[in-house]
Amino acid sequence: MSPNDLSSYLFIGAVLFSLGLFTVLTRRNAISVLMGVELILNSANINYVAFSHFGSGNADGQIYAIFVIMLAAAEAAVGLAIVLAIFQLFHTIDVEAAETLKE
Amino acid sequence: MNVSTAVFYLIALITVVSAGMVAFSRNIIYSAFSLLGTFMGVAGLYVFLGADFVAAVQVLIYVGGILVLILFAVMLTHRITDVQITNRAAGRIPALIIVGVLGYLLIDAIQATPWVKAKEVVYTATAGRIGDLFLYTYLLPFELASLVLLAALIGAVVLSRKEIKE
Image (spheres, chains in turn yellow, purple):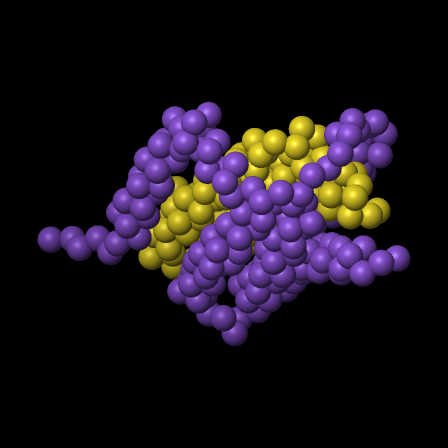
C-alpha cells in the first residue's frame, strides 16, 4: 500500500463496495439503502479515476466519474422524493412495509 | 515513510472507517454524518490521483448537495429519538457471508492481476482538458446529462408535492 500504487486505490474501492453492498442488503430503511448506493457509486468512481491516472494518463476516466456524480445527484433527488412520498402514504419508510404502489 | 504517504494512510483510514460507520451504526443520524467522512476521504483520494477538478466536484455535489438532501430526508421522515426503528437491520449473517466472499474475491483478483502501468505518471491541471473533452468528444452525453438533470428536477417536484384531493 502506497500512494503511488494502483492496487491500493483498488483495494479501498473494493472495501467501500463491500460495505455499501452490506448496507443495501441489510438495512430496512429506505434512506439507509440510498446511502449504501452512494457508497457503491463512490467506490466505482475511485476505480475510474485510479485507472485513468495510472493507466492511459488522459482524462476520459475523470469524465466518466463526473457523469457518475451527476447521475448520483439525480438519483438522490428522485429517490429521496419517492421516499418522502412513501412516507406520506404509509407513515413509515421501512422498505418491507411499502410493497404496494397504491394505498 | 514521508509525509505524503502518512497523509494517504490517514485519508484511506478516514474513508474506510466512515464507510464502516455507515454500514454498521445503529443510529441513522450517525450513519448520515459518517457519510461526510467518506465523501471527504474520497475527495482526498482524488487529489492524490491528480484529479483536482473531480475532487472539487465531489466536495461541491456530494458534500454540499447529496449529503444535505439525505440529512433533510432523515429529519423529515423520522422520529429521531427512536433508535430501534430508525435504522433497523435484518439478515445480517447471510449478508455478511455474501459480502465477505465477494470482498475476498475482489481483493484476491486485485492482488493476482498484473496491472499494466503507464511509463510515467503525470500531474497536470485537469480542468482545461476536461472542458475540451466535454465540448468535443463527449458533447452528446453532456447535453443528454442536462436533459436528465431537468427530468430529475421536474420528477422530484412532482413526486414530493402534496396532492390536494378535491
